[in-house]
Amino acid sequence: MGSQYDTLAAITNLTAELPLRKYYEEYTFFQALGDIKGRSVLDVACGTGLYSRRFQQRGAARVVGIDNSEGMIDYARHLEASQPLGIEYHVLDAASARGLGTFDVVAATYLLHYAPTREVLRDMCTSLFASLASGGRLVSICMSPDMEFADASYYRKYGFEVASHGEGDGDVATLTSVAPGLPFTISAHHWSRATYEEALRGAGFREIVWHPPQIAPEGITALGTEFWTEYLRRPHAEVLSCVK
Image (cartoon, rainbow, N blue to C red; front, side, top):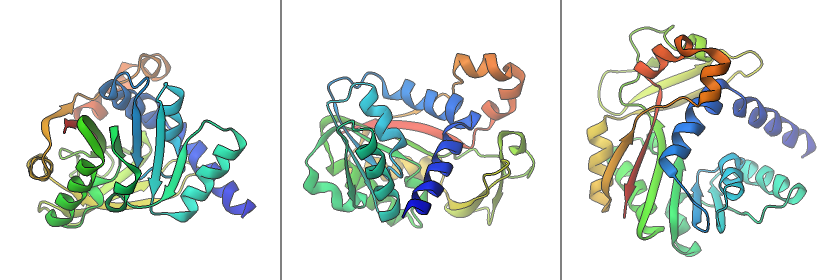
């Protein structure tokens, strides 16, 4: 188990320090999220709890992380035991979270694009909707509908390459890391903006907003404006929010 924890720790720490995560993803996500002091937050597909810990550190009253990976939750619980923040973790998927009560905020980072069909996407959105209190918000990071696939090298300087396995809505897209010491490949489904919005509205959500990509001032200082220009033109991931 120690070796498993070491591996998960290394992956978590390395990805947390990647410029895109630190200066783009987290910054844009938390700008969209706003003030969560005193709020309850359900972190769906929480992985090792990176965002769960961020929510607690930002003053959330209750944070619950769920993931269907037992290994990820074991490691999240290991971190919680070594540095207690009061976060609950459960091995569950979104559809099984209803017994946990309702929340002011549901966060779904890199979840919706794993839906292989429109029906599954709609079911995911329905489950997320059920976990929210009335007036609560869903804030999600998903694969951008406008990702650049024509040029395989477009994202290389940002640490990865992407390829599409078809041109239709929902076709599989693959992201392969080229960051030193961090080899991984992720496959997901490339859905259009209209398909995401149809699934969200069908589940009952309203006030759907796609938040403009933003870079943290520290990221501009560290890497310069020019470094980010191409990425901001065609980001690989976008943040959306909506209301129950």
